[in-house]
Length: 176
Image 1 (tube, rainbow, N blue to C red):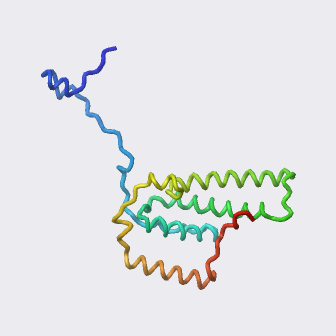
Image 2 (spheres, one colour):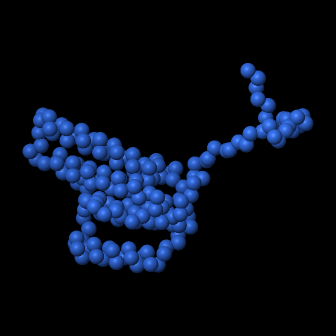
Image 3 (cartoon, helix red, strand yellow):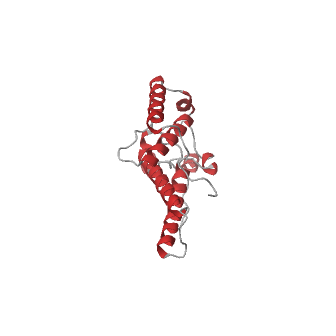
């Protein structure tokens, strides 16, 4: 098979013909696609634990400038997976949990699978130490705070505290 001669060599030799050259597209580099920065709206029907995690993670990602409206689906699945992990951890932590029972072992396997899914979504969102080094933040989006959004966040926080009371950590304590 004859090795293809590049266009620069053909131009240097004087054999280059524009009508015989196929237009080549450069492969997209990571980070080339830019979506407008924004805060996605929380979908209706999420569990209470998932809603709490949604508010927490969206605020953190928004402050870092790494979130866009297009991230809504990933955030939804991440938050619901977090709620599943919390629920399964509570079941496993029950005092009468018998690891010899087949149903109990199924719950432990479900917990492991949910934790694996949670970690994958956390990596996609840049929420792990290793994945944060690969996330490219938009510095303008992180520093430019919309005053209306800040006021809306404060009002939502005030309402949440009034309704739910003081914040408590949703996840079971480590080692418990």
